[in-house]
Image (cartoon, rainbow, N blue to C red; front, side):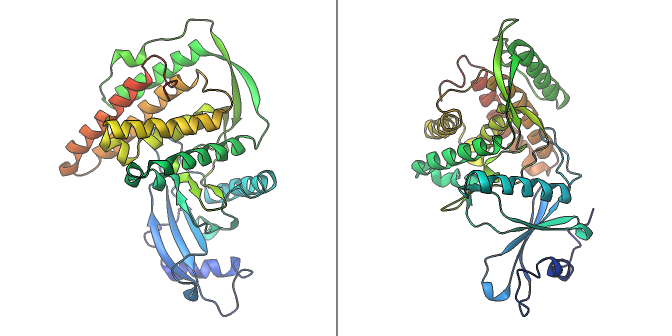
Length: 344
């Protein structure tokens, strides 16, 4: 894998020039406006000198060696380019541009990277920041947009209706949750693992092609388009896996973690979750498969957060671990309470 820390801007622009020849004037030069390091990739925002500071393209270098308890490792650059190309073509035809992806441009095999057109907007994670406390009305349309985009994505391949043994699903989720907490040395409460389904209970589920990491950071909102970012589309499973991932990562935003169960924060969180679930499942309601899948996902996420914090400096470790512990205990208490998620 190419070392992005050592990559010089001239190396990047030299590799870019041939693949962008059809989109550049002969006299235009390329300039790297920003390099952004993320856990799972490095992003380079590229434009032209007379275009101001707004980029025209994004070069993405996936960190395919990144491993974490709650998520698969990123796909290669070539696989990501192919996946986004498929989804882009489907959404352009299906949604007429209302839901889309940034237009994929080319791969850069020598750099282990791929190129997409820059899309301007705000992510749902941005909307769900601290300003939402004073402007709560901004959350509902953002949640509804995320639900609309996920519904469109889940229609990419024909869904399959399957019979789900709810008791078996719950048993598997409980075992998975216990394993993650035990292996990470995290405390567990027996109330989290209480069975709610009798043997032989089955429900109908929908198997779809999954986004794989449907999180608020991967939903970009512009005035006319909802952009789906970083799709994987490599697995088919119950649609609730993507729904659970979105809710869990929404609630993992700093505002909700730090705010805890403060009445205003809790109300805002409930309203956001309710708007997303109502829009995604309309005209129905969330299925009973949501709760066990959320239990297993929360335990995996807590483990990932715990291991991430444990690798930080000692000065920050103790306080952050206490904050994360409080957050996940509260969330697990909520999910394991009777009736969840009907309250939303």
